Image 1 (cartoon, rainbow, N blue to C red):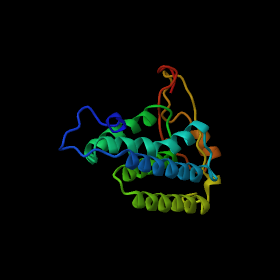
Image 2 (cartoon, rainbow, N blue to C red; image 1 turned 180 degrees about the horizontal axis):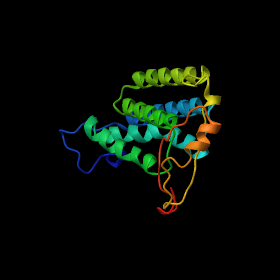
Image 3 (spheres, one colour; image 1 turned 45 degrees about the horizontal axis):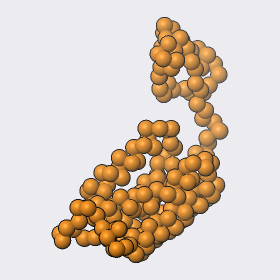
Image 4 (tube, helix red, strand yellow; image 1 turned 180 degrees about the vertical axis):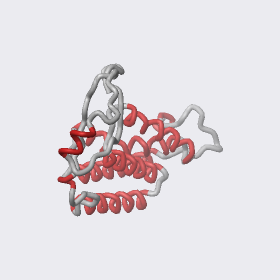
Length: 189
């Protein structure tokens, strides 16, 4: 009776059915590895509670998706990719957040395929490198104090090309116009 509870409606002899113990083993590994990634991200990083919880649960979600598509990596990656779009369509994330999300998805993908040893190895290596780069302040500009980003908001009918050149020439060593975007429903630049 319990065996029928976990049997799919569309299972056939051609489809490999995942046993409950294998499912729970992969799910447990994914949850533990997600927790390790979340604790790694918390160390010396600004974070929100919701992001850390998501990071801890994401490997398990991806793991289950991969297990339920019966190891079809193409289908699993497509579904997991659709899940990942939810983050990118909401609050813009930093590059560090995007990297750790993809690492968590990779961990879940590996665990969902049943390679639990590789999932652990991948998580340990990625978390170790993440901590190392964080500790070394890898990528931090040594002269970051000399470079500042200055944002100016102007009405849309003002021709901004060259209007601030004399002020910038007086008060800066160099300046670049990096981006122009509209704001306030297009009424301001």
